[in-house]
Length: 154
Image (tube, rainbow, N blue to C red):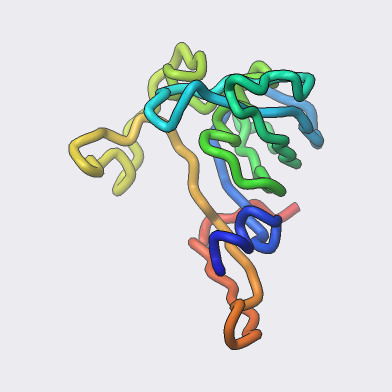
């Protein structure tokens, strides 16, 4: 039931990211995302839906930027739920996540206390934090809100 909620946009997902450069204040990104398979390391962005061989699916992300030096703290709202959606959309905008070499970052993430630890033997190379998830529980009808404590408020 939760998977169906996620697929149908029933879960509000807000992310906080550190991106390269200074980007526009607010954006709405709508395109299609696809990959050759689940084992593909990277997804591709398409402006049209004709990428059937890659099973491209529509993706919609809204974002708000706040410049911080030569980077931007970004709040992304993933309206849809696609693998690597935030990473691919940030790169498409020309502002990849700092340290995300797979999607074009040329910078490395500076050490952040408590962040640059390993997870499943892989170091954390970029900052992308699921800061808020909100949905109605499919069985009980209760409103569920999970916050990480790291959010940008404008």
